[in-house]
Amino acid sequence: MSPSESQLRAALRAGEGQPVNPDLVIAHARAVRHNRRMRVGSIAAAVIAVGGIGTGIAALSTGTNGSGDSAAGSSVSGDLQGKAAAPEGTAPRAAPETAGGANGADTASCPATPIRLMVPGGGGTGQFGGSGPLFAEPVDSIRVCGYAATSLGGRIEATGSTVLLGRDAADVATSLNAAAVTRSARPCPVQPVRELVLYPTATTGGRLAPVVVSYAGCAPWATNGTAVRYDWTPPAGTSGLLNRLTRATPGLPSVPGPHPIEPSGSPKR
Amino acid sequence: MRDEPAFRAFVEANGATLLHAARLLTGDHYRGEDLVQTALTRVYLKWDRIDAPLAYARKAMVTAHIDSTRRKWWGERPTETLPEVPVADSTTGTDERDELRRLLTGLSPKERAVIVLRYYCDLPEQETAETLGMPVGTVKSTCSRALARLRVELSVGGTP
Image 1 (cartoon, rainbow over the protein chains, first blue to last red):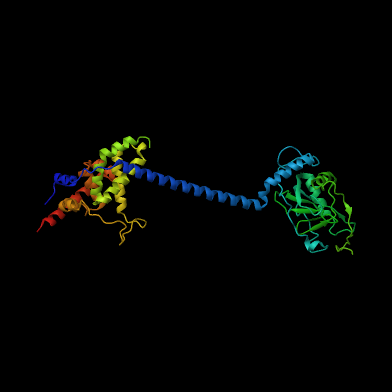
Image 2: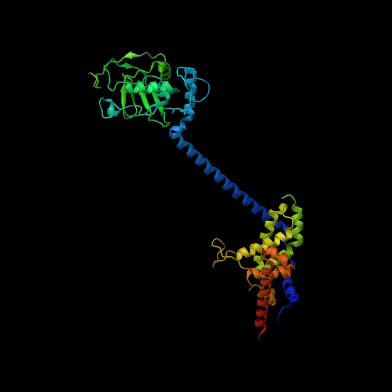
């Protein structure tokens, strides 16, 4: 048997004619569309959730390093502008005492809390490397962040920031490098903690190690974690500004401390 | 979907033809119903965007059928325990009586699709090629090969 086209057509058409219920098709299609939308919606929700979690993790990770404190730093800068009558703008700029104006070398914000550096040799004198320079290179600018405790033993908070430029920055660096490498013996005042954190930028454009200047104890000391200096007196051109940055809480007068300090650094009993 | 009455009219006018073509493609009564439902569902979901719904339905049906014949690791699996109670196929007797249609199930899915589109849907070679997404020459050769196989099978089956 060899089928002709007509035979084939006739065979294929045999049994046709059963209709399709459009209501069933439409109901099925609606269910399919509903399921598809639910699937797309759930996928979109999952993507949004994952994105939100990722953004949160990223925000948290940036918040734990220095760059994440920009919000706190901005408020610090604004605080400084009110106290030190700094020029307009949100970024820290040179205060009126600083000459030359801002050069944009370092306009980053300050952390909300001061960095902690170990004093070499536990604060003693003559330790190895302690007499080395605090600023290893000539300084072009210094971002200065001020911190002070609200009371005796109270929490340390940011009080302001500024950027020293050109000669002012160089004078501060020079005076700190030239400060005493040993403690002096003198009456020890009890006062709330005041600290300056200096973020210097070298004339070559590189960043130098930060320097912490603390007025917590009897004599101010400064360290970059390797070298240490005592009894630093800021240059005349910037002392007013720096003092305002770390001013103690009003109403807490300084009183003489009970234990004078010997040059060796050990308290006298 | 904005024009549901039009879709309903389309199904009422072409549903029987599409269902029969689906049964010829699958060689099975119920799988044919599933296939035509799948194709018409796709038509429904794109009704507002398609210009030639019948051609789209034919193409969707053929594509879905050929896809279903491919082995998929995520697809349906044969099982010894059937979830449904078996029902007697009302078309079994008809299939047995119609030797040509029985032999049609022995062809490959593409050959079967060419035969159904050419000799049941009466599509010209060009339109068959467009529906199947293959060149016209391939349609001709596939059709010729399928017809030759049917002739051979019929001659073998007719030999006492």
